[in-house]
Amino acid sequence: MATLDTMDRALFDRVARARLTGLHPWLPRLSRAADHGVLWQASAAALATLGGRTGRRAALRGIGSLALASVVANVAAKHLTRRPRPVLEHVPLARQLVRQPFTTSFPSGHSASAAAFAVGVALESPLLGAVVAPVAGAVALSRVYVGAHYPGDVLAGAALGAGAAALTLRWWPRHVAATVPAAPPRVAVPALPGGTGLCVVVNTGSGGGNGNGGGPDPTAAELSSLLPGADVRLFGPEDDLAKLLESAADDAAGRGGALGVCGGDGTVNLAASVAAARGLPLAVFPGGTLNHFAVDLGINSLRATAEAVEGGHACAVDLGLAADDDRQRVFVNTFSLGVYPELVRLREKLEDRIGKWPALAVSVLRVLATAEPVEVEVSGVPRRLWLLFAGNGSYDPPGFAPTRRAGLADGLLDVRTVDGSSPFARTRLAGAFLSGTMGRSRVYRAARLSGLEVTSLGSARRISVDGESVPAHGHLRLAKARAGLTVYRPAEPDPA
Image 1: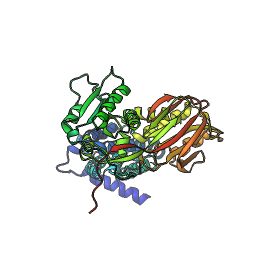
Image 2 (image 1 turned 135 degrees about the horizontal axis):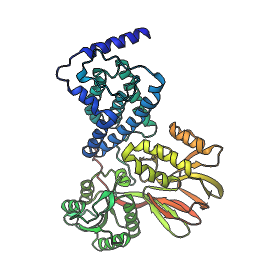
Image 3 (image 1 turned 120 degrees about the horizontal axis):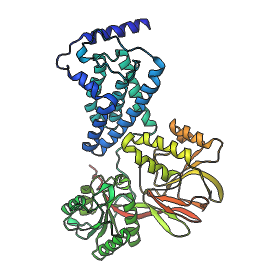
Image 4 (image 1 turned 90 degrees about the vertical axis):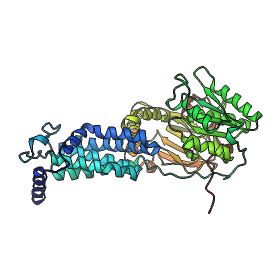
């Protein structure tokens, strides 16, 4: 240890004495820019703005990794080690950072944050990670150059940050781009050149739209440009969305065409109900914040759907069904009862600020601290549940954060329950989530089922269908309508 410490101090002296032509005064400025994560927050904003969906995922994982690394390095590690700051006698006053938030040197919090952000970004996009990595390396070098840390502090901080980024994979697996298989692979639908025969309802309030209050809606304008023959109708604050969709569907049926919808998953849910009831094909244009259904169909842009409509490319997908004593509702993505609706609301409120998986962790802990399990009967058996979740198709990953599907026509519900009756269920649930072992926890159960009877909703007064919270009463049956909806989707590549 003495030898390593001596080598560390000797290397510090060499770097501190050095005059790095071309890098001075940039390294001191870069070091200051990284204070309090400001540099990385600005970088995340740039990635999210300019990098598309991949850039947004990379920015969220980078900021989430940084948040974890910063807490471990600055709150835990520094107060355990108490290694003094370097003596600055060899560092020119012009580049010294005299004001330091900590008197202890090990590990370097700046280096931990830099490595965490860079590795977090690289986990989502190696290309974007390669852009960020040199900046992160320069920040790490700057901490020795300005006399704030020994090289060993910087290496330890970088290792800690990289480890924090890797740890996020336990809660938030990497996005895997894959074409969703559908059965049957191809369904005969009308090809609509120029969109003739297509009636599209655009929810101008989805995804932060302008609500049609500040001039022409840009999404509607783009749709009209892509499909000049389509009948594009805007849903505004004074309209009834269900009636607007029903009117559009009736007109499309009279023209031998199709119903189109542009909005978030809640809007798509309603359009799917209308299209399925009339036997019409549905064209889904992504226009909401998350667009889970469109993404799982392989649709990432308005143009992708427009090309499928003009080419007559479509598939049949399943619909989930949730029927209580009052009515039957469909879901294209997910159904849930228990704490999940509140958990999702909190997560979405926080994730833009702290990243997706840290927001999920905070939300789980908050909900478990204040909420109570619901009392229900499942197939006649009394159950006390934190969560009953059913996905329309099989979702990954297991646990509290399902994000993607491998298929939309498997005839099965992805049913997950989290038990609230076991001893210390609340503590065990929180521990399983935070340790990334939810899939092996005794309070968690998962199964693939064709249907499920909730014979009494008991204390559960509301359910969530595709993210929309609605009242429910009495008896509930979950089922699947196999190939219940025909949707336009991008054509499969022709085999070579």
